[in-house]
Image 1 (tube, rainbow, N blue to C red):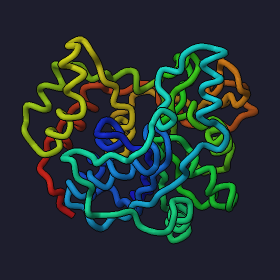
Image 2 (cartoon, rainbow, N blue to C red):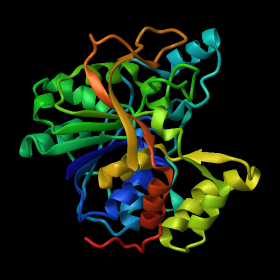
Image 3 (cartoon, helix red, strand yellow):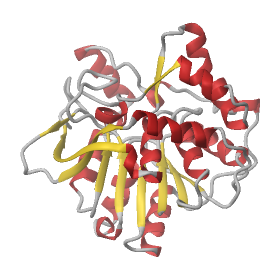
Amino acid sequence: MRIVFDTDSAIFNDDAAALAMLLQRRDLVDIAAITVVAGNHTVAQGSEHMLHLLEFCGVTDIPLHLGAETPLVNSVERAAEQERRWGPVSFKGAFDEAPPVRPPHGGAFAAVRPQPPEAVTALTDAINERPGEVTVVAVGPLTNIALALRRDPTLAGRMKSLVFMGGNARVPGNVTPAAEFNFWFDPEAAHEVLAAPIPRVVMFGLDITNHAPLHQARFERIVGTDTPLTRLMRESMGPRYARDPAATYYVWDCITAAWLLDPDVVTAAERLPIAVETTFGPDYGGTTVVTARERPVEVMLDLDVERFFAIYEDLLTRPVPIPR
């Protein structure tokens, strides 16, 4: 499977862990490029975490490209106004991040650096080089994909598929009562991309990711196997459990990665017409199941939790550097 991995990054959980899982199975997944978008972090900060992971894993042949630094419409000011009018937004990601860019784990920046061209061109080139063969795996806001489709609307028909983490069909949001973070950060991009005639669109929203919380007992079992990746995992995720043993993590993007490697990990899915709320109000960025006037997408709804965590644990406890 040839993919472009479009990410808003994270220190380790969950974007970086999902990428690490895919890197461990390069016999199954051919990553043409990594593109970074603002979301969890600014592009400048997020790219440093991804570059660190690539260097850490000994991967030197996958280029990383810098993408959209802001959403299409949403902004720091709009987020502040939304909170003032309608209550807290529990996580605002890059909107709350200020310079300077900080070095990732270990206190040093990676020697490997971002590559030209910028992300939208890299994404477009990867699809045009292999029409009908490239799956775009988007685990952050959909800004880069929306900008690529604005530049060339015919690009949608040359994609094999879009697999994304975002949205919430039948469950509440996780940053507002209505909205999941990736869609809240750039609702307009999500609306445009879901309306595009991409041959196959697969949604991993909160409906499925809520089913696999990572509790401390499982976390401790995984990091009990001492590998470079589990050391990163302990450094990134351990403090939350140290503060609160009853805490949980959700591993959103990792479920998406696991399905790419083993589709049988998903046990329930439906084709549903999904609408994204782009009117500025309390439901901004929320998604709902609507009438059939919206094009349906494949909405993943449930998974074999133990099968998923077996994949997750296996891939994150393998040695690095990762063999080509």
